Image 1 (cartoon, helix red, strand yellow):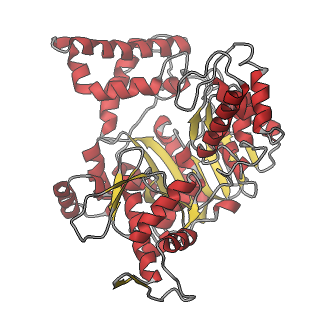
Image 2 (tube, one colour):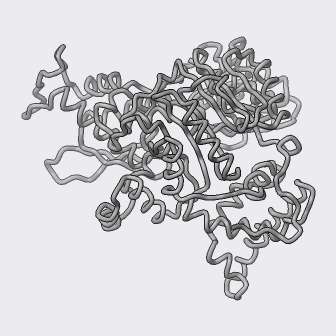
Image 3 (cartoon, one colour):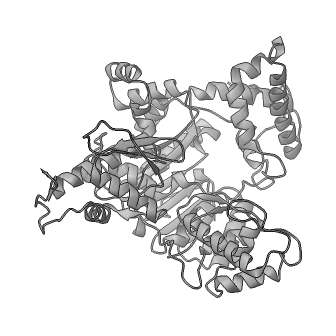
Length: 557
């Protein structure tokens, strides 16, 4: 039970008074939901033609981003805050979308009139509503999910929630009596700052909270940002709300079962497996856990998990609980891992180590896997269908494939594996990489239309350009991920509408804010380009930035 100050005001802040920021959430995209569902033995609906419902959609920006990229799918959002829905409906009109609709509607009043859905999303909802509303949410999933539908529900989780509760209780104690929402948020921020300041005197007794919660405070301060760069909406509606209830996974699963649902898995596939814990810990979990859910609960304790993104489906669906290699063949693959050589004993087959931006890695000596990783790095951020990836990788290592895919080819003194064997080993390695980290290897059920091959008149994502027009610098790309842009980037991106060449963009830039001295461009290495760089230099910088846009998944194919 969280702290409530005596005579505290009702901490449920009006969403009309302080609306949520219009955000997108990559982990809610139906492609990811379908990927995890397929890995666990389901046959989810195709992403290109599906129906998606988001409960608590705010302005609906998460759905609008999907709707722009998936014109043949249908998206429906509901939220009980009319002001947010009106804002979202205006965006729908601005973008000329016909495949998305938003409704000002309380979940408790939701009936069957909207039909059934292949995917249902409720992000940042379950932990922040009373028990009757949680029960209603699960009942809606049970009633409105298609027979093979996949539902997404995120929530604060224990055991990490115990630590966060202590931080939240301090904020409530300090700011709970303040009536005005924005003032309450400011004081809550000040409390976090004060806790962090005690760390400067770590030898004195009063810094005990900081020493025990050092990493949590650091991470939370980073999450909050500063008031100038980040609104208080998340703080008010999350930490300072009247209801904020974390759950153990086992509790959540029991609640789902009571509603006729079953747990499928987590959107972060690697978090479901004991691949990233010490071997002796994994052995204890394997011996002690009586079910897949119990094994994941053990892992939550080990990792002090604070948040979960769980997937559910009907109890009638058969869940294997263990992915098959054949399933991997249905996926699109992408990876941006860099490679480095691995020292090997003389006479051994050469090996490569592939390292992701998050530090996770995979080492392999399988020639086709090496060729596949190299190819994926070259075409990043494009997603390549497994069959196409296999074909290109085998071509690169000099395999000759018979029409049946069974012919053995002799390379050097030893016979090479068959095409079928290569496919099996490649699939196993891709799945292994994905089980290590979703940053090391990405599996998808959908490939957006993007390109890294720039046309004479490049076109940036329509959704990205619309976001820039709303004065946003945190932009959702074609991969449904956020990209942070600076002011010159926004200037350029807004004008990538297919009507200008890069030279024309450079000329426009010279005659605009750059020529007027309002801001200065930086070169690709981050160094200043000079107050008045020559046009040739500006043209090179523009070329480099647009190429970066392409690598960031912002250029339409």
